[in-house]
Length: 107
Image 1 (tube, rainbow, N blue to C red):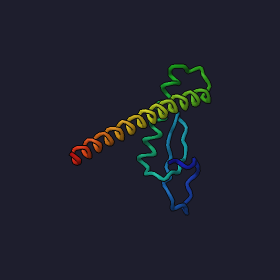
Image 2 (cartoon, rainbow, N blue to C red; image 1 turned 90 degrees about the horizontal axis):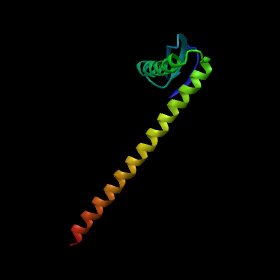
Image 3 (cartoon, rainbow, N blue to C red; image 1 turned 120 degrees about the horizontal axis):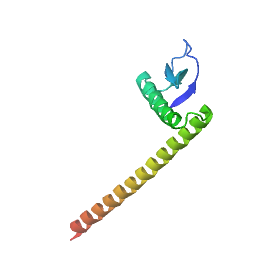
Image 4 (cartoon, rainbow, N blue to C red; image 1 turned 180 degrees about the vertical axis):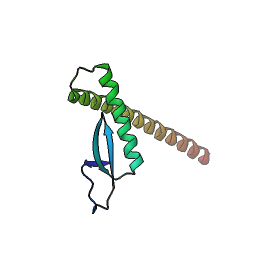
């Protein structure tokens, strides 16, 4: 998880500090992840922001950021819901299989 955007400190031994560029702006990021992962996330976000910006370049950047955050939140919630449905289906199948095995052992 990215804990904050801040300037790297030489005495900070926890996590990784890396500079990323999002919409042409450089940001120092500190996170408990490796630098490549942080750059990958930043590139993903930059791509999403640019997609919305290119569709409506006259919108202020804050509105572009809010729309991007809403779109990403929608994707996250959809994936969480789909994941929960898969977990529930898997658990149901395991129960059915266990019940079937138990019935076979009792016969």
